[in-house]
Amino acid sequence: MRHRVVVTGMGVVAPTGQSVDEFLDSLLSGRSGARRISLFDPASLPTRVAAEVTWTRSDFRDRKIAFAMHAAEQAVEEAAACGSAPGGEGGLSLGIGLELFSMEDAVAAKHGDPVPSARRDRLTFLQTPSDLCVSMLAARFGLTAPPATHVSACAAGTDAVGNAFHLIAQGRRRWMLAGGADSMINPLGVAGFCSIGAMSTSNDDPPRASRPFDRRRNGFVLGEGAGMLVLERLADAVERGAPIHAEIVGYGTSFDAHGISEPHPEGRGAFQAMKRAIDDARVEPGAIDSINAHGTSTPKNDLVETLAIKRLLGPRAYQVPVSSTKSMIGHLISAAGAVETVAAIACMKADWVHPTINLDEPDEACDLDYVANVARRHPQQYVLSSSFAFGGQNASILLRHWPPC
Image (cartoon, rainbow, N blue to C red; front, side, top):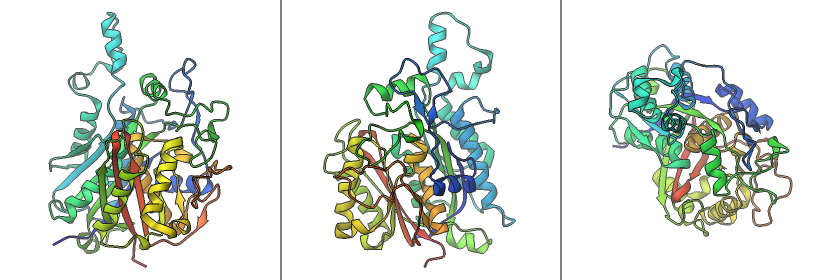
């Protein structure tokens, strides 16, 4: 028996909003969160812009742990707003970034410098904040089932949600907290992406630096944040009167292993992940009403993703709206897929597709309907959200409107 799985709680921390309502408003308004980097001095780097979270919470020293906790609190609180919490043993599925922050301490130790007292912590000495994020979330929300940690780079957030969906659908969990968190806006993170030429160098106009599918795109803008969702069996959600945002109906993955920082030139892995998500849901490609694209604003991804969508949808590809959330919030790496799932669900509920901003001069080879610059009223039954990661790791998730149209 395959259980139907629904989303009963959502939380988000993004460069343009720290609640789902605020985030949705920013998306439909086409507001960019990109600005000059303030978390450190980027003067020596070719890229000096990013999409930072304006943050006031200080109870966690590691930004991505703070983001994850804040988004999870929103999601769990909303799922219990009906007066009862999800029942049965809960699990955690988390996409999380690789840790670079502690290198600062390693350099200090190498030179015999004292580690600042704010970072002198026995737990963070023994474990990375990535480990701590999982254990802290599990302890905070009483999640006693073995957790699943995903480090599949830019696909990690989508993998986390998809994995949670399958665990519930297969009857192995009653409910799951799933999502992703990341923050790489630090000297090592930004310099690393600069070294492979992946980031935009449009430093003079940060809000317009991320321009997916535009002829003048020159790389992605790095973002940070978290997206968390509560998933549970439909029958359980209905029984306790929980709010239902959407149904998750399909999940697909692939691994094309073409290159570390570039996709397969024919979009083989991207197509496979999207097709497998649709097949998992037992629907035809013609059912897709809109696509939340990976849409990084890099020269290679946007072209290859366009090819993959055309292969998936055939001639109908030109009639399906395609939006890039990254045009406004940048690339949140391990959190990207989870935050974009929240974006896709929120827009689907509102009967809108958000715009791809800064699309002023479309690339001739990127010739689909990318909802340029202005949000569009568009009722949707099925929305496909995809993430295509470094190293050829790809993941797609298929969402259905609730109640079904």
